[in-house]
Amino acid sequence: MGSYGGTDTGLAFSKEIIPVLGGSPTVKSKVGDGSRFTFSIPVQMIDQPIIQKKHIMGT
Image (tube, rainbow, N blue to C red; front, side):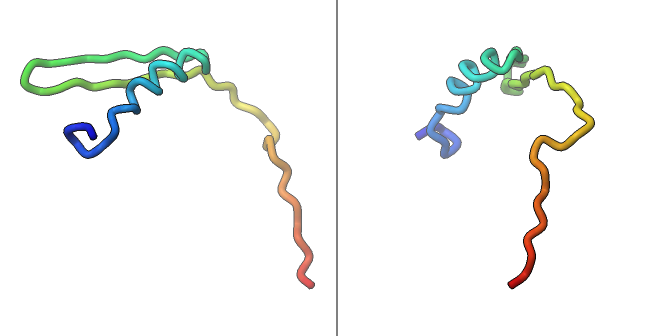
């Protein structure tokens, strides 16, 4: 267990998956204040929904 109740796997997982998605992780640390982890992932806007909604008729 991590010191805050987690399993400490989140950062390791993020380090692996973010580059696969074309993104990049960053970290900023300040003594006595802690660290801030952020990431960016490129996205593209689309005009149409990826999943089409289907109407379900009642029986």
